[in-house]
Structures are given as C-alpha cells and as structure tokens.
Image (cartoon, rainbow, N blue to C red; front, side, top):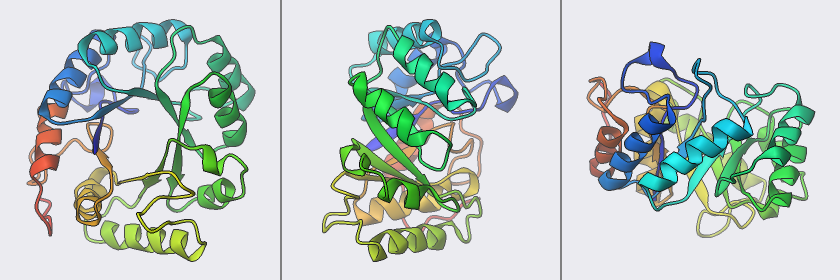
Length: 250
C-alpha cells in the first residue's frame, strides 16, 4: 500500500508543485490516486499557507478531495497546528466534517489526549513514532496503543547514506520491546514505514523490500530518486511503484 502525502508543512515557497488550496490538493490527490496511491494524507491550510485544524478549512478541504477521489483521506494533528494540546482537542471536537483518519505524533505533548479525542469522534488514529524521540516509549506505555488504525514508523534521518540503517535500527528496537508481530504489525496494527528528504527513497525501498506499507509525496521529498525535482505527487507515486533496490539517490 502506498499512501500519498500531498503537501505536509511545505508551502508556495517550496515550489509550484506543492498544493496549498483545497482545489489544488484535490487535483493533486486525484492524479496521485490514478498513479497508484491507495490513500491520501493532507495538511489543510489557511489562505496564508499555514497548517490548521480549523473546522471550516478542514470541511472545505475534505469535501474537495472526496469529490475527486474515492479512497480514505487523513489529516495531520501535528503540534505546530495548535501548540496547546487543549486547543487541539477543542478543534477536533468542533470538526463538522470528519477525516477517515488522523495522524498523532506520540512524542508531542498531549498525544494520548489527542488520540482519545479522535477516537471519541470516530476518527481512526495513525500513530506516528518518530525516530530520535521518546515517541516509541510513550506509545508503548499507553493503553491506546492497541487501538491504532496503523503505526507510522517515521525515520527522521535525512541522509541517504544512513537512513536505511537508521530505519533498521528503529525496527530492531521495536522488536526488542516485543511490539512487532510475525507479519510486521506493531501492537496488532499494520506498520507504515517511511523516511523524509534525502532518506525518503532509501527507506521507501526498504519498506517495499520488507513488504510493508509506505508513503511518498511532496511532504516527504521534493525530489525523484534520480535527484530531479518532482513535478507532482503523481510523479512521485509512479516512481515509488517502479522503484528498484538498492536505490541510488542523485
């Protein structure tokens, strides 16, 4: 399974390919799904290009994307959208249109409470475990660990020469803690493994080799495996489907 992450925290300053408006996100998502993506992850944005949990913006964004695709659509709940956990929870409670799922970064303050708020609204939780943080420990200690839709193993090493080893070390740490099942699931939930920036393609190739779900999109990288700038999310998804390993990043 390949999920497309259409924009992330990037904005117009990162290039014209990054979709910011709801209509642009919808067009980009539709092209990416046509290229082979099975799900969409999106960061709804204010007119100024800032990530937001605003119910009005969320409703407009989700409606536009769902008019364009017939696959699950998820959103971020990253702390940068609302630094105060209580405010994040209030925003979630005020949503009038619900995403299919939302990501929760377990190293962030209030992660467990945010996950509880999502589950209370009937929104599935993608549990994000970032390498180099205490997110893994906090997640495994939580009674909500077994209630994830999936676990996002997010490798934050941006170096293409070391990202694969960083990913393998993180997976080994999860295994040592008894969290990984025979089919690669974490606490009973499917794993999605991905990297970022220079590490995006090596980690994606590793995920494909291990038979794990993964993701790609302009949130994770602006570049194709050969180092050229990607013209669209669809081009990144196509490259992900065709990728061979070992991958050489230009």
